[in-house]
Image 1 (cartoon, rainbow, N blue to C red):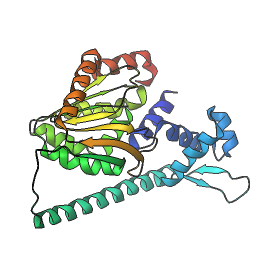
Image 2 (image 1 turned 45 degrees about the vertical axis):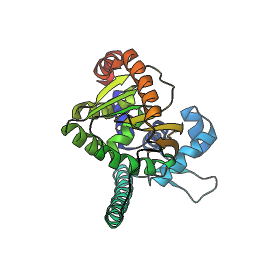
Image 3 (image 1 turned 90 degrees about the vertical axis):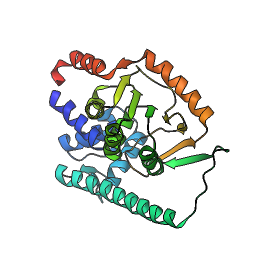
Length: 277
C-alpha cells in the first residue's frame, strides 16, 4: 500500500492529476479494461472515466483498442513517461522561441510606459499565464505571493521553479498558501528547498490569486485545473491596478496569519500515515 501511494505521488509530480494517476496506475497494475469496468473499479462515473482517459491519451500514456467495445490499455511506463516528457519539452521550446521573437521585436519598438492608467487583460490558458508570469517575475524586485490549490505547486515545479530560485537568489521573497495533502508533499518540498515560504490553509476553497510587488495581480475567474498541460483552459484577470493589488494583499495577509507552516503540516501528514514515510 505504501508503495502504491508513493507511485501515485510520483506520477502526480510528473504532471498527472490525481484521477489520471489513479487510472493509469490501475491499468498498469490490472491490465486493459473497458470504461464501464474502470468506473466500477475506481468507484466513479463513466463520464469521468472518459474525460480522464482522453487526458491520458493526449499525454501518450494510454491506448484504446480498435475492437468494440473499446478497451483501454496503459502504455509501458518508460515509453509513457518519455512521451509526456517530450511533450513538455516541445511546449517549453515553443515558449522560448516566442519569447526570443518578442524580445527582438521589442528592440525595434519605442514603447512609451504609462503610469496613469491601469490595464486589464483576461488570460485564457495555462500557457498564457506562464508566458506572462515569467517576464514579470524577472522584472519585479521584492515579493511574489500566491494563494491556490496544491496542484499549482506541480505546475510551478514543471515550468517556473528555476525562475523562482533565481528571483529568491537575487533577494526576492516568495510566499505561497495552499491546502497541503499527501500527494503534493514532494512538490511542496521542492519549493521549500529553494527558499519559498509555504503555508497550509486547511480545505482552502477561495479564489486563486497572485500579486507581484504589490502592483501587478492575477485573480481567477475560472481556474479548475484538471490537466497539467499548457493548453489547459483557465480564466484569470491580469491587471496592473495597484488598488486591486493592495486589496488582494490584505486578503493574503489575513489568510497567512491563520495558516500553518508547511513543514509542520507535512510532519502531521507523515505521522498520520507512518506506512507512507
